[in-house]
Image 1 (tube, rainbow, N blue to C red):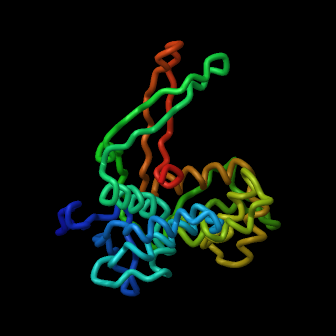
Image 2 (cartoon, helix red, strand yellow):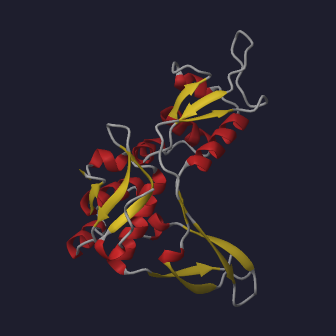
Image 3 (cartoon, rainbow, N blue to C red):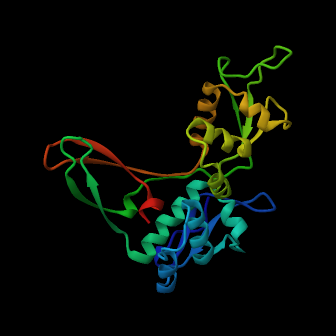
Length: 251
C-alpha cells in the first residue's frame, strides 16, 4: 500500500509507474514545484529548437525536486517511463496555471471544419497506474514467432517499458517512420529474444510485422498511461467525433 497521499497544493504526487532505484525499489512519490516566470520565458524563447522529449526533460530537471528520497537528476528523469513523464507534465501544468483547460477544436468533417471551444478539468483525466518492474516477459503467438536456422521458433520476448531517454534518442531517427521507427525503439527496449541477449538489433530487424504488433500491444498493457478521449459534437453540423488530448503538445 502506498503511504503517500497526493497533496497537489504542496506539489506532492504519486507516479503511476515509478523509478527503479539502485536497490531495485520502485520509487513513486515525487515533489514538484510550479514554473517561475523566468522559466516560462526560457521555454518560450523562439531561438530554441525543442523536441518534445528534450523539452520535457529540461522542464522536469528544473521543477522536479525529488523522486522518493532522492534528489531528481537528469539521468533519473530520462529513466522515467514515458507515462510518468506525461503525468508529471499534467501536474506541472495544473500547479502552474490551474486545473481548468480550454482547447479549440475543428470539426473533422471536411465540408464543415468549424471551430469549437471545449473546456474541462485536468483532474478528470484518467490515469492508468502500472508500478514499474525491471522487465516483462511475453510469449509471441506461433504465427508471429521468428524461426531460427535450426527450425525452432523463438516465442519468448523480454522487454522493458520505453523511457524518456528512448524518446530523446528518437530525435536522430527522423528519417524513419511508422514501423521502422518502432523497430528502432525495440532495439533499445528488448532485453531478450528467444531467451538470448545476443544480436538484439539483428534479431529485431527480422521480426515480422505481426510480432512487432504483438510486442507493441504488450508494452502498452504494462505501461502507465495518461490519456483522455473526449467525446465532442460539432455545434454547426452535428458531427460526433473523438478528440485525443495530449498533454505535452498542449503544454
